[in-house]
Length: 158
Image (cartoon, rainbow, N blue to C red):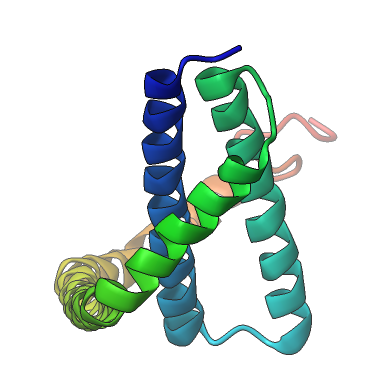
């Protein structure tokens, strides 16, 4: 028999786990909003999300109470998710949406800067290579004629 104090600690830990699961679900929702996957990708993503978090919940149960599933286990998980949903979800999602927009803007700015930097660095180099290409091609032509059998210095028929 598990002492009552230990059961309360397990209950509180599982309620915290319910809150973490609900927060992870909010993160997943916000990620789906920004990536806008098609229906098949959404179904696969949902299945992977729930499979992963089922596995994590199982591991957590094994660590906290040796895998014993009792009524208070489900009650604690649901209560934690419900408390998070009632009191924290809306403000957390607002912050996540704002952070996603800021991150998206920063990534777009970084992409533009990288494209411009590459353009500034590579364009002059490409122009220089094009400018130097005609003497190189001329020298290649002369060199290939020189080393070809029957050309100057060749030993064909001689």
